[in-house]
Length: 438
Ligand code: SF4
Ligand code: SF4
Image (cartoon, rainbow, N blue to C red; front, side, top):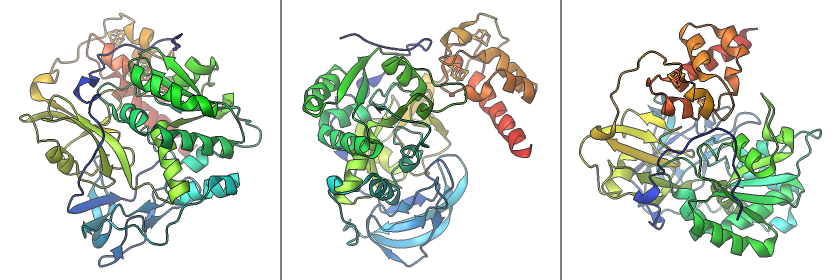
């Protein structure tokens, strides 16, 4: 099969051998779950329960605020024992609901599923919003918003993202192998909502078993599977669209600007559950892995499970951790402790030992140009980072800093160990602040 890809990018070791062969296990519930109100891009939800309230699995505990927002639900049955700021994976103290599990894990009786064939597109989107469905690839953008392009942006192609190009992570790989029927059902619901018939699932060639399984299972449904070259960041939306359709998302634009909607395979599976079973997004698959973990695993976890509980279930730590990351090593968020909970965007928990962490100090730029060669957006990372260090906001903006997808390729390849993506992220904040003021 022809392998497609995009220009730029790089090949870090994929390090998936720790967990790729491990079947998904159900992680037991912790005694207490910490469920933040802020778990998606857009306005955080507003907490609507109080200490002492009894909740069931799927009960709404925070209501959406505005169109670009979704509700948050209890991930198990039990009692609300605190409503207070708690450590969030972002590193900040943010409002959260703490639930003491009653051990029954009973679903809210008011929840019920529907036959998607009996519902129109608007009703399906309302159900997805009510179920709190967001992009599970890590971006956590509310799905009902992504499925509502304006009339002047016609969509003709749905792309399912099964790439999982971040090293170490294997949750989507296992989901494709073990639960393809949920993914396919979700794809069919998405096609109905979009009113189109073309869907392509993109999978990197380092998952030949998933490519074979989905090719076979999708064939009767007219859904195509496209094998892709193993290259980071093949799973970024713009790079995936380029590889599969040859279309370019314009600078500052969105996939809808070239007629495409992209959804993660895990999101498709969650969409099937939300419509057919009426189950909100209260659990997800995540990979707990890395040389710092005794028994790496792929786990089905309840949203709100403390990271320390995941580590404990995976046999504990291999010595003192050198670095804890939520997500993958390239785009994940560094964690200061294991106190924070897993949230909807938690695709993995990656732990390195001290000996795996580079302590090489940053040196002066060698003008080697490698960062420019690997940038998948064709930016000049070294120039933008220099402007960032000098706080030259206008100059960085003129070099299209806002187009940076923060993939980390430039930082990874830099022989001078310069923190390029960190500098660019900083100046992007400055550009956005300037735009808000003017
Ligand atoms: S500048 Fe941004 S998009 Fe380009 S390689 Fe660096 S992090 Fe990735
Ligand atoms: S990769 Fe590093 S050393 Fe080379 S040009 Fe870019 S910033 Fe300079």
